[in-house]
Length: 210
Image (tube, rainbow, N blue to C red; front, side):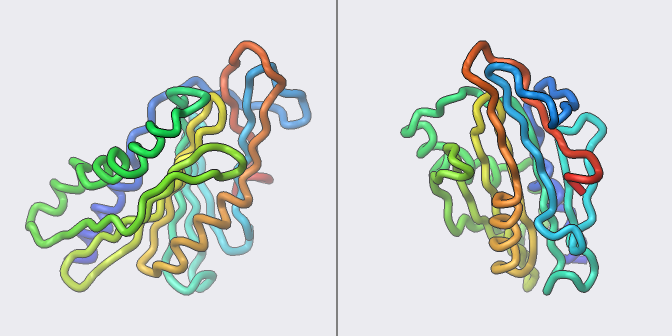
């Protein structure tokens, strides 16, 4: 029963609502418009991962196939419009140290599921970083309920007009960290020439993303 509760809570923590932004399919062979950005996501090892993409392209979920990883592992990638192209360093520090941990701990859906009161959320680390050449924040949270625990590793990348949120979930701490790093490494971000901002786009399709 506790495992079911933890799993449900994790879903509530992972699928944090993203701010909607208009995104369109884009032909990767065509040049990017001025101010635009193109993101291509793919599994670092296609033989190990099953992937799904939402109808609007705003969310991708990758699950490690049975026996392909040392433990169960899920990667979620969410796209939304960035509040700014150039985050202020002090604001980014506040997001890492205060706002992001607070938002994870205050997840209403998770609190409802964990209403029996014996669950504990612990922030293990939360800091600013530079990922793929862009400003970012990273967070590691441990969720414990009874003798059951899981690790949620999060990276938020501010890539021009686009904010990319990657989340890695596993009972295996090393696996959660390793998988997040591998997906960040496998991600490709391209920016168009300077100019008037255009809509961010995501690309891939079954041959590149899944």
